[in-house]
Image 1: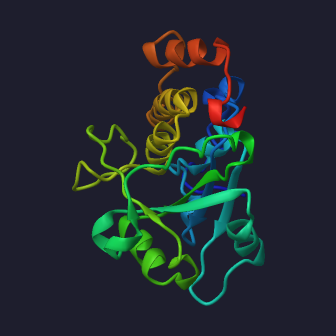
Image 2: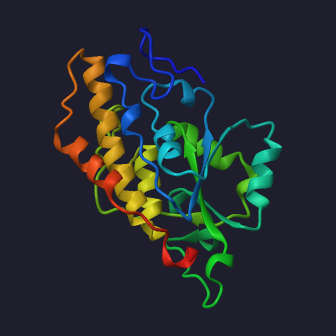
Length: 234
């Protein structure tokens, strides 16, 4: 899908100016957990959107546009797929207490690869859009709500927020991967976001890329490291 923002020619792969392309750095980490993005109307058109970073890193990433009056049948099928245990990732203050969880249950002994895989549902939009999606999606009402308790502040620099506890979509995905025991995916998402932020801002300000900075070096180290699925997937 085309993305707005830059008026110059953009790379079809990473949505940046060709001079600041980061396609060659695209990482991929095998994970047991999956991500489902519910995207507000124009979120995919925003050049600062970070949902596509998740799709690059996590193979089982599904994306759907959100509408109040209709729901994609493929989305409902995904949520009903018995291989997945969906979690709506949202602050606990907006959900009934009995729906709220703060951690994932450990897999039952002996189940191993047959245990249901966590599927993190991320509401991708502005804070007001995300609240609207949460309130007006009755087909999510039966699902547990995963409330995160991060001990850090957001490092996202491409949009302004009045609150330090508001995170961009990619940061939320990294926190979810941490809860799922997907340490490599967590670290890779963090490093990939740092690199994307650098490329985006350098392109916006017409400055060259610092290919040897700490962010690029960290991503290269993670990309070269051997990866494996969490023990529960074995």
